[in-house]
Structure formats: C-alpha cells, structure tokens
Length: 285
Image (tube, rainbow, N blue to C red; front, side, top):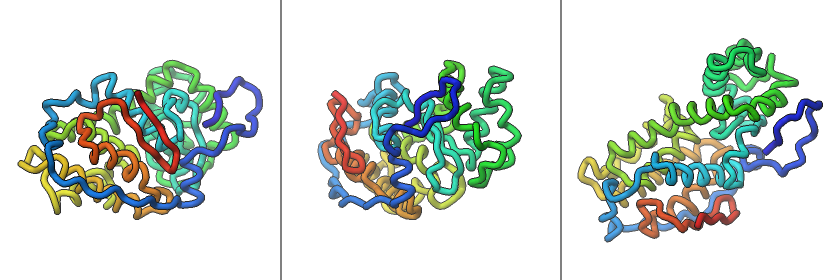
C-alpha cells in the first residue's frame, strides 16, 4: 500500500502492487478446493461455546485475516492510507475495507468525515464523488484525490470514520446474521469476509443471495442443521459468487484459509492460525 502524504507532490509508489491490483490484472489462478468436511465432533462447538467475532480480540483476528487477502499483510492499520484504481470497474478502491468511489460506500465515508470535521481535506471532493457514484470515472477526483486521501489518513478522525463505516456497513450486519444463524466465530467471519468482497446489494453475488444459494442445500444451526455442513454449503456458494467476476476468481481466501479452519474443526477461530492466500503463508500465534 501507499504511504501517507507529507504534503510534497505525489511520488511514484515504491511498494509492490497490492493483491487487489494483481488479481484485477491477472484474474488469478483458482487453487484446488479443500475437500468438504463431513459432520463430526466439530459440530459440538456451537455459537454459544465460542467467543463471538465482535469480541475485541476476535475482531482483531478478523481484520488481520481480511488484510492478508486484500493487502498481503497482517498490518491492517497500515491500510487507512491505501488508495488505487485496480481496474475492476469500481473506480478508486481505498482504506481498510476497500471503500469504492463507484459503489457509494466511499461517498458515505467522506460525507461522515465531513459531518464530523467540516472543511477537512476530502470535503471538497463530495460533489465529484456524488457524480462518479455508480461508475468507474475519476472526473473531479484526479489528480489530487489520492494524495489528499493519504493526507486525511493521518487524521485520527478519518481513521475513526473508516472504522465506524466498516462496522455499520459490513462488520455488524455480518456478525448479527451469524448470531441469528447460530454459527460460531468462524461462521461469523465467513459472513464478514463475504460482505467485504461482495457487498449486500440485490445482485446475485451479494451476501444475502450467497446465503440464499447455500440454503438450497443445507440449513444453518438455527434451523436445525449441522454447523459444519452449513458452512461448507455457504463457502460453496461463496466460491460460486467469486467465480462470476474475473477480479475475484482466485478463491484461495476460501480454499486455503477458511476451508482449512473448517476442516480442522476450528469453529471458534481459536489461535494459533496458519493459512495461505494467493500462495503467501500467514500465521497468528
């Protein structure tokens, strides 16, 4: 990811391209799926027995897991300043959760920041963000929007705005649905990761339609189903959704991460955790 601006003209990025860029350019190679885990003693680990994902320690794990997939780093807090156009048709992608200028969530974020801190460095871009919403255009944003985003990212108020919008739009809805379905920490994380990538709109690949697809073949624990069977069905539906878009077609964030935890019966997402994404190995002790 890019470094925050220090007020000098925008330098050429020195860091390696993010995974977002590499996937958008190359589409990614789909890795072999981990075999489905049959219902077993792991099913005994219910949501009631797990610490929920909104526990601070578990939430920190969730942020690191997402960052490993989105940015090839466990240092998720370094991503407040991240911004680039990865060529996926969503305009600029930025921040800790990949807010996009073309999908409305970046507009909501910048509006929240302006409401809390009028006259901030990004407030002047609100008219342009309204115009480009729903497109991949940069009209009214270039050339200085990326530089100003990185400047804003040094402001604790903007960092908090990113945290709050992440929670409102993505994290909290995922955890609430996970608790309603009575899945444990891993299941709640699987929901969160799906909403991060696919959003929760009305399109076929949105989170609730992924869940609806899974319901065709399994039931969540709240409906009397096996948690392991349900999570495998959900991840199957998630993989299907990912393969509908070239930029998301590498499914290793499911195959060699979430499926690994599920195969190991780690429904509570307890550490230590070892996984791989796009061929890179990660560890949380």
